[in-house]
Image (cartoon, helix red, strand yellow):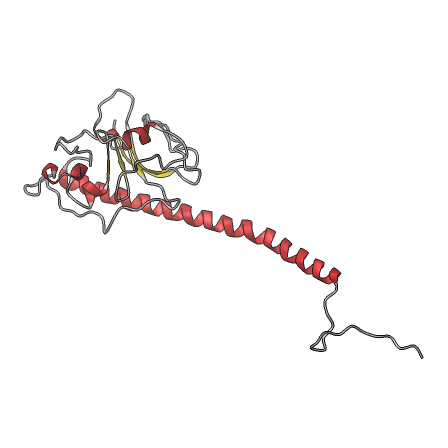
Length: 215
């Protein structure tokens, strides 16, 4: 009778062969290849949904501000209404371009003369960070804030939302007719035209809402 020996490990169990290990690894890699895109897709959907919800909240706060004060949050640090072009969300204005490409809105928003952070108008009554420039707090048309529960949010990709407040007050035959609350979306680039004509829609992967329209 011929005796055949078997390979046993220290615990008395047969070890995995190289082929079995390769098969297991192949299955794991296959499942990972399927799962990672699915999870990534769910995360992207979640970010988009969050941005869509936040632009609505910001639009509602800005609308409440307008109803109370009679003006859009476009007051300069000098106390002059209807002067700012762009508002950014976040606690402080960016000192370097936080977006993936340049755009007129970014140029305006990062300019101290044309841009400001929304918090200075809706959370604090300090346009441009200047208390002396505050909106009136008495009378029928007055500041009744704060209009935000806390610092205005960055979008889910860590960039500011943009509000082109110029479209609320600037008079032009064709330009600046639509005001948006807008995120640059996953690609971090504003695809929507800054001109904001009566037919300018939110384009590319920008996520936003039309806040107001001029005729």
